Amino acid sequence: MFGPQVPSVPVTEINDETYLLDVREDDEWAAGHAPGAHHLPMMQLPARLAEVPTDREVAVICRSGGRSAQVVGYLLHQGWEQVRNADGGMRQWAAAGRPVVGPDGQPGQVV
Image (tube, rainbow, N blue to C red; front, side, top):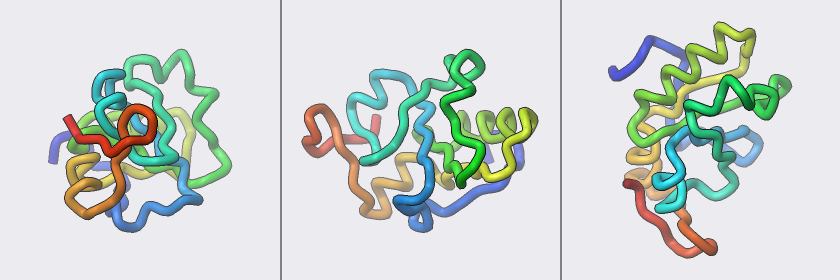
């Protein structure tokens, strides 16, 4: 595993009711992301913490699971209870056949 041991969820179990938080950098997000995901680069998280909901399930995703595991650990330490790491990140998301969109809603790619 890449990061700390934190609660996780298979990407195939993430649904539309889950707040999907993508913590990758701007260029990674622009190349391709999950439809409906919310973009908040990892390094901006402390300053924008209020944007992450505390009243619903949050799944955190990055490229392969390392950064997102760190963010899950941070959020748990800050008092979040319903937060899990998306197993395998966007690489696994795409491999599972889940949609990836790029600019203007066109098909995207994971970089």
